[in-house]
Structure formats: structure tokens, C-alpha cells
Amino acid sequence: MTDTAVPATTKKDWSSDQEVRWCPGCGDYSILTAVQMLMPELGVRREDVVFVSGIGCAARFPYYMNVYGMHAIHGRAPAIATGLALTRPDLDVWVVTGDGDSLSIGGNHLIHALRRNVDLTILLFNNQIYGLTKGQYSPTSEQGKVTKSTPFGSVDFPFNPVSLALGAEASFVARTHDMDRKHMMETFRRAHQHRGSAFVEIYQNCNVFNDGAFEQVTAKEKRAHNSTAGDRRHHRRRRSGRRGRSR
Image (cartoon, rainbow, N blue to C red; front, side, top):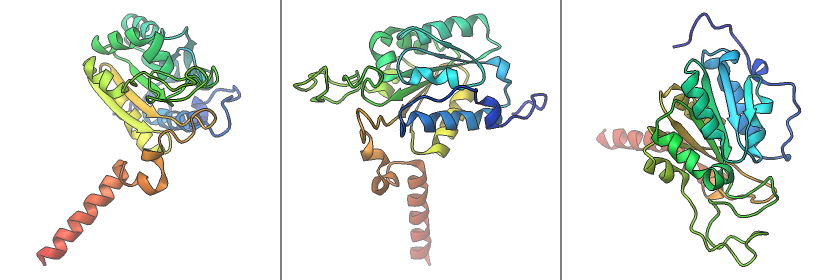
């Protein structure tokens, strides 16, 4: 329930004065907008909110939120956020990370934050590539991926971030994608409402180094079959069909 003592805010109040510096067309823009639009609805004060990030394109996120934030070192955002959440349980602590940041050098920190059920909201931007360092394969890149660091194709089997979170016994696990703002906002809302470790993987398109990585989900002709909106339309058609037959 929204705290009536919290002053009403708008997206503008949650947006910093910093120039947003991602590549034009990057999926990070839509995720940022979804978060900034959601925050006024959560009934929280800006001075009680902290965003912690590691290293990578996604890690610039705290600069663009008009709240407290920390741009930490590579992979350590969950560890820093854990210390903050445990010592200041009155704060609303978010972690923004990428597939390279949290599943490579930061893998253990992510796993232990999840298994300890620390009260954090963790947003993992997954674009299946290292974007900031110009296109090397990441822990979520598909097998056979040809990149600057794997010229003959990656031999690794990729991590599935959701499976990893479930294996670590995270108490809230969800997935969304950067082309459905409504779904993102609702997913982030539910993650925020959860008390304990909430993990959200976001399929995020890197249009420079890995464009179209998630077209099997986000392509217009396939989106209806891979989204909650599509499921609702499908169920409505089925219900209307059953009613027609019963008549």
C-alpha cells in the first residue's frame, strides 16, 4: 500500500540531470524509462532508495537515477549491496548488473546474495555479449558464438540466469524483456514488493554488438506467443470459442 505521507512524484523527479550516454537504440534506454516511470508508484522516498552497480554498460544506471547510488567495481555490486541492506534495512536497495558483470567475475557474489535471501531487488541486463569492451562473448553467449575473443566460435555452454537463480534458491525469480514496458514495470513492481532476494533477468538488445539476439521472443510476429499479453489474448479466444460451442 502506498504511504500517503510520501510526497507525490513524477518520472522527472526520479531522473537525474546527467546526460544519458548509451548507444542510440540500446535497450538500456527502455529499461531506464520503465524504472523511472515505476518509482513514483512505489510509495518510497528518493532519499531512501539506493542503486548499486558494477562494471559494464548497464552499470551507468545509477548516474541517471535521482537517488543515492554507487558505481562499484566489477562483479561486486551484490556484495556491496548486501552490506548496505543488512546495516540499513530501512533503505530500498536495488542492484543493476549485466550478464558479464554478475555471471563471470561476480558469479559467487550473486549466488550468495540470492541464497542468503538478502532484501535486494536485482536487475540483470542480459544481452549475451560484452558491450562496453566492444563485443567479446559473455557467460550467456550461445555455443559457437563468433566474437573478437572467440574467432572460431565459443566452446562454452551458456549460463541460463533464471536456472542459476533458482539453483541458488532465490525466493523471487522472473524474466522480462526491453520491448514491453508494461510487462517490465509490473515485473519490477512485484520484485520490489517481495521481501527477500528478488532476481529479474531482462532480455536487453545490444544493437551494436549483438543485434537481434532475442528475436525469437521479441519479433513482432512472435511476440504474441511469448508474452503475457499474448497469453491473455489466447485464453480469451479459447474462452470465447468454448462459449460458442456450448451454445
